[in-house]
Image 1: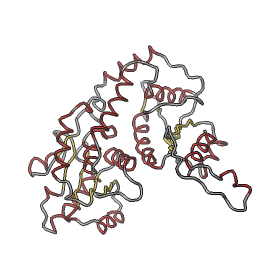
Image 2: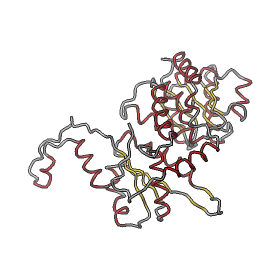
Image 3: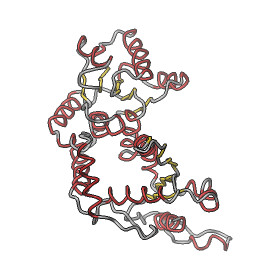
Length: 348
């Protein structure tokens, strides 16, 4: 369960009436990213496809960029082993760097690879260029296109939709009222997750729980409203940079996805014609304590910080007694879990 520790927040007061106003304005926008998670039919479709192709592919390759890549990558890195991923392996190709494309091509067996071509608009140039390139590779070895490509795109428009109407390539819809950066809980993120063998229904249940806590309209224990209020009030005080700092290795790429969510959602010209927004900065604890914290501690006071850490620590890995060094003797018998938590608290 998510919770927010406001120990270091500056006496922030939450306004119940203000929350009601915000909820009304949010609902007036008719954005579907928090209602699409109630669509059980799409879950049935995704699970049926994943079961039908189970064991057929060694590699799943996402051809996409921005919201079509960052969310799925965060799911993969959060929920799968970091160093030895079981098959199928998921590769996220969100660049048109030819060296990267060649390395991928050298690594995969085309005959045992499924390409997920993901673009909300159906016309993203980088994604289409990747699609045309790998489609030709598949054709050159005489494989059936529909068995090695899946489209995830707009229900009605775009280049991919037009191709799917002419050819029997499987296609999944990104709801028209869901923006690309918010699409992780549509087939954009759920199909790759299902193909990797993840329990997508549990993922959706978790999302529904957090969504319902926000929409209930209560200030207490409302992490979404609390976090948004903290960031807004920090911006009012001139702290326009948000440092997002997970202390869990599996959450590192969540920071990259969060950066897009924050930058594209708040970087706006406001109603008064002013340029405004929060600038995301991604750090990793404990790594960036040794590369960035000097700036955060003694640099400009224009930043606020979000630390992520698990509530319970794993104390099974114990540091053995150091030899011949009094400076490190305090590590003797300490678990890595305790060391991690102590470093987080000290940095905060």
